[in-house]
Length: 410
Image (cartoon, rainbow, N blue to C red; front, side, top):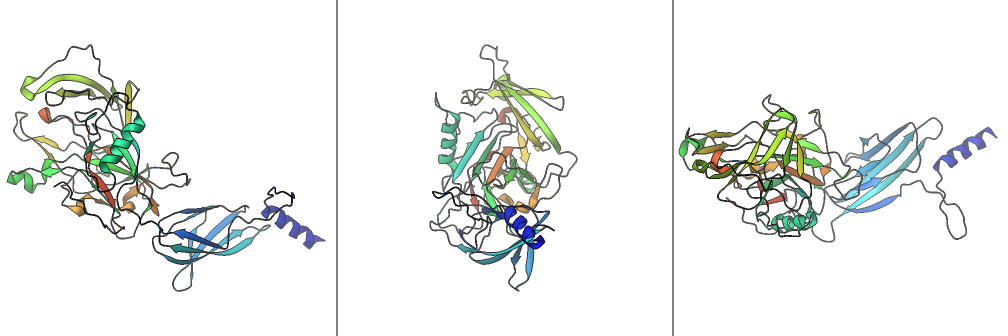
């Protein structure tokens, strides 16, 4: 009787009752024996029972078991086609369990594109190119503007979009998970940076470099949306330097249409107190308006009268080399930022998912990423050239063969 009682206890912990036409209960362990899955697509395995500890292992080429997770759930994701033999174990004194199963990873039915497929968010900060790159038309909603951004930088399109001043961002993704391949760069993002034609500045890699910070997220909840998934910064060359500020927050206010402009004609500025901002470090200032861009600089499709952005603030990279405010040079950082080097320098515009760190700066291993966010990393104003704003023209997954032709901006 004692043995029968233990058996019934074990079965009760593993049974899921499913209603059917005859009301007959069926038993489900929550894990099938065989799964067929396209490469670079993830699948979440959720057992229908619990225990004290869990163990997921995968057979290596040599036949040994390799531990892949000790969590209660496991997300399977592989870059290459093939057969993957796995074992799931519950380590529990009352309800121990072991189940062998298999994933057969196949080639996708429709070939993946190496380029952007989806724009999930476009939230620029105020700036001189906002409402023109892409163009806002009266009545456009946030969804409309996301569609315009998608039309600009998805696929082989390379029509530049602007993120505005510090904090403005865009969130995009591909038609598959971008895999984290050990020892390799994983994706590239192109902008419009260039070096000065003057020899000494060019040699120092200075010109118009407007670095944007990259964030990445893995779709852990498997709902296809960048909602509750945790974001991680890709730590570039400046991340650990004391001059880089973490937890920086800035708030911009909608410009007052009745305010009297204060001009600085010598710098081509029609209003130096155009859009006010304050930050959490005690700073305050303005996004100035210049004579070259007369439209409203505040994103007109957003209803909020204040826009707040938060993240890492990079140290200033702009230097007034003339001494009179007439020739500003924006110097590039060594690596790890968007719109930081000319597009022809492919390696310097490429990113490794293994650079990911959490909010405390600790390295994080991600199997791949489904969502990529780029935001302007500088709060900087350089005379007549205005605010420093990151621009983007295109992005691609470096692990997918490029069968199209795209001519990047120089």
